[in-house]
Length: 183
Image (tube, rainbow, N blue to C red; front, top):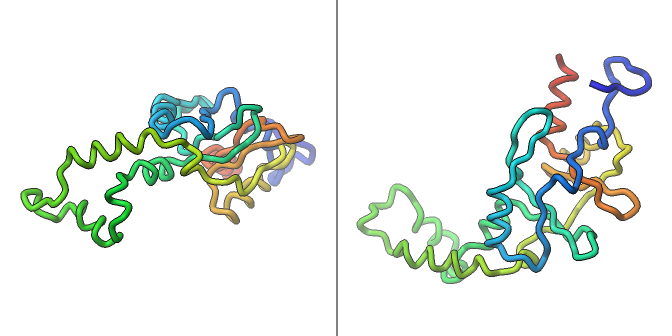
């Protein structure tokens, strides 16, 4: 582990040392479909520190490479919910998928749900992406990243310098560094 000046027990690594570079991180564009985003997320596998990992969040980049937002798995699932269900009250929607309900009494035909999901898969990512609430400089210490992630309840923060996206720092990678500090 590369430590910096003051190599005592409290020395920390920089964000740039543990970030995943943008060219190795899965991304989509605002005009891409939710179906495409699902494919990107399912096919993406990251190799970080010798360990394989699936992304929980995709970066959403504009044509010029500017950061448009982020797209979480939950956002995609919410966006794929069939239109006919979205108009129903949440209690009703939960009841339809309650595993305790007798499947012989189901009010909702499976093929209708699948058709509704497939219909929604054509929606653009921009409809459900989230705005970026924080970015971090590559020269920041990981302790700053930890502080931001905890304060903002984020599992990923884009690493940006001079308006350019350089990569991302994820909570799983930061957590791995914390574990190294403890051992």
